[in-house]
Image 1 (spheres, rainbow, N blue to C red):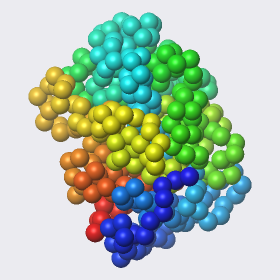
Image 2: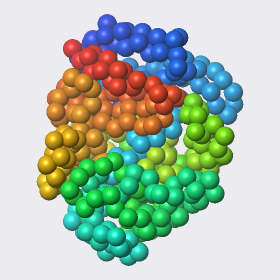
Image 3: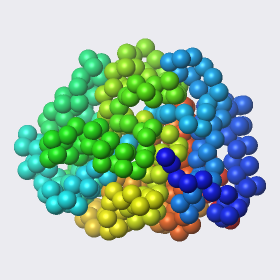
Image 4: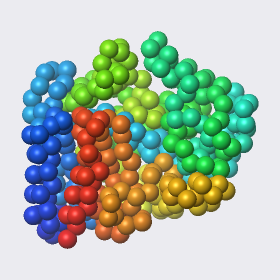
Length: 361
């Protein structure tokens, strides 16, 4: 379904600056290393620009990259997993200060008993980004349950709540909590409670056969070229990693961003309360007893969302990037939202975010 289509000028978006954005992305494709990129811009709840540039390499060969191409968005998955956990908080099933060990009994030892749901949502749990045996698990095509078991065994990097450290393992534990409390695997929960209600019909956690012909292959980094678990492999695509396994399009992700610009609902379809939507993109790290060094580092997190977007966006802006070359973000002060999805992990997506942010007239 997507957002309604609006006229750029009528929505306060400068057509000349949109043209400059397009020229920037055409330059990426012409000069390398980006083979394909899709971009979307929305303002005041209306989609004003969605376009594809370059080539899509996929299971059916190569061709022009369409505006509705499907991308593995990598860590842009994380705020969506966080959204599922916040929905359980709204329903009274968990609270921010519930100990994870009370929800997942085997999550114990090594100081982990002090970790709360709040810590998982704000990257302050002390868990590592990837579990120590991450590579071995991928090499043997382990199921998600084995990643959960490894997280339950691992040691902490620091005492919970005292530092901020990006942690995919913590997002995995949020997914495990959702699954245990609802009885639904996270992909099914997100489909039923988020994607279908919002009309995000081209989004899935994990592989969906009907989307396959539109999926753009990722340009693999050197360390994945000889692996059979790489981003484009059947194993990884079907794993549905809660920290990085979502597939989506620019139009669908503009809808997701609009949820947080419109206080939890889009076109009358509500997935979050006003308070919950605002809380997810508010500074939640200010409540933590961070060490002096952590405070000086200046990182700020909401629940699943990194605060800040483009270089010149407001302090109220929020975003998330993905290692496959993706970035989504929005600025409540201007009502502007932008999505950049590429096939290149090294793509300078932050520069595209700056160009998108500049289009607000």
